[in-house]
Amino acid sequence: MKKFDVKYYRCSNCEFIQTEEPYWLEESYTSAITSLDIGLIGRNLKYQPIVEVLIKMFFKTDKKYVDYGGGYGMFVRMMRDKGFNFFRQDTYCENIFAKDFDVSSYNSTDSDSFELLTAFEVFEHLVNPIEELEKMLSYSSNIFFSTTLYPNNQDLLKWWYLIPETGQHVSLYSNKTLQYIAKKFDLHLYSVNIYDHLLTKKKLSWTAYSMIYKERFRIFFNKYKKSPESLLQADFNKISGISM
Image 1 (cartoon, one colour):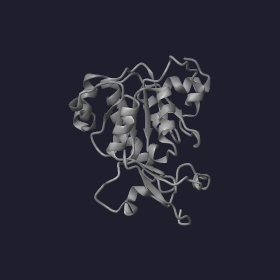
Image 2: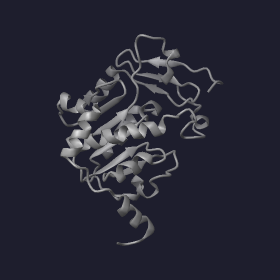
Image 3: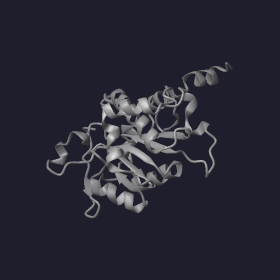
């Protein structure tokens, strides 16, 4: 934040990197989403078609889903428009696009969990990742998330993803860190690049999983397996009180 000198520590066992106790967070989160996050819209546009095919290939399309740390609710709205019953969870950010679809509005029971949890650009913000993962797993045993793994071949203090200007990226991961997390919670880890990762109880085909990142395959697959009916009209009726 251009005002604090902060120490970073790396675990010699799992290679997890974390700042010292982040005493500056209250100040850094005066705006939950910083002005430097100019990729927010592009990120939602990128992940909507990927998650759509991910669900149709490996999960149940008629279940409920949750976007953890869902920010303004844009991703939830986009997925609901595609027919997927998404809800938003976020403690810090105003819900603009999915106001009526926060997790708090969904009456769940211990046995009625969500089929899939998404968490885009959340893990690097976590002060206590293990504790937060336990919360995520209380929602779903399937977690699809994005966080950029740090490189081993450059000075990390010059790495763009550190973003010290915002003071919000306090936890950084390597593949070894994610493997440690997967083992701790008895989950399978699937990472086909340094950005996107899936933790799940399911054992998937690596080849099939990697296909969700190929646009031509997604187009072909969507012709073969249609998405559920859009929830846009039903949501409008619910919010407006109009029955049709």
